[in-house]
Image (cartoon, rainbow, N blue to C red; front, top):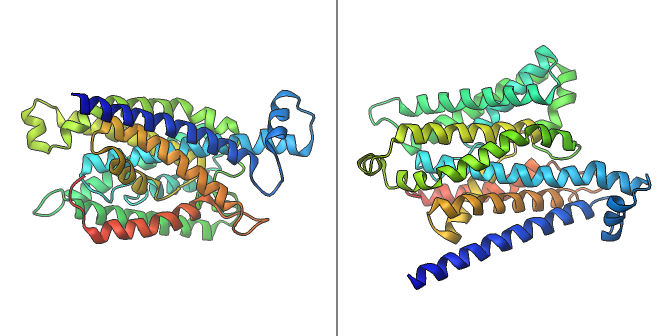
Length: 336
C-alpha cells in the first residue's frame, strides 16, 4: 500500500510538473518569434495596451496561437491514446488511420464547391469526415477470414489516408482559388488563427476531454482483452462507441482549427505509457499535457528554421514523428 501511495504521489507530481511546463511553453510561444518581444512587453500588452505593433502581435497573433497549439496538441494526443486502446494497435492515431485526412478532405470539398467559410460549418464537416473515415477503416479492417486485426486496421487506415489525400490534391488542382485558401491550412498550422476559432470549438473539445477521463477506467478493463472485459460485465460495444465519439470530437475539432497535424497522436501515448504504465487514468492526462508541450515546442521551432518565413507546424511534427513511427513499426509491438 505504501509503495502504491508513493507511486501515485510521483505520478501526481508529474502531472503538476507537466501543467507548469505547458504554462512555460505557452509563455515561450508568446515571446519568441521573428518580431522581438520580451516578457515585459507581454505584461504591458495585457495591462497597458498602447496599440503598438508589438502589442498587436502579442494579443492578436501569438496569444491565440499559443493556446490553440496547446489545445490541439492535447486533443490529438488523447485521441491517439484512445485509438490505440480500443484497436489494441500501437500504430493507431488520427493521422495514421486517415481520420485527419478524411476530415480535411471534406473541408476542402466544402470550400471548393460550396464556398463554406464558417468555422462552425467547418466543425460539423470535419466531424462528419472523421466519423465516415473511422467507419470505413473499421469496415475494411474487419474484412477477411481473420476478422479485425491491428495489421489490417493499419493498412486500411493507410489506404484511406492515401485516397483522401489524392482526392484533396485533385480538387485543389482544379480550383486555384481554393488552393490559395486552404493549402497552408492542409499542411497543419496554428499560425494566423484567431482566438474565436478556439472558442467556437471549445465546447466540443471540453466534451471530448471530459469524456476521455470518464472512459479511463473502462479502457483499463477493455485493455485486458475483449473476452475478459465481457466476463467482467463490461458492455464493450458501448465503451468502443463512446471512445469513438470522443475521438471524432477531438480529432474533428483539431482539424477544423489547425488542419491535419500529424504524428502527435502516435508519439505521445507511447511516451505517456513509458512514464506511467498502462493505466488510462494516468495515460490520458499525461498524454494531454505531453501533447500540448510537444506541439508548442514544434511550433516555436518552426519559426526559426527558415526565418523570416515559417515552416508549418505539421511539417515539424512529421519530422519528429516519422523516425518514431518507423521505430515502433520495426519493433512490431503487439500489446499496449
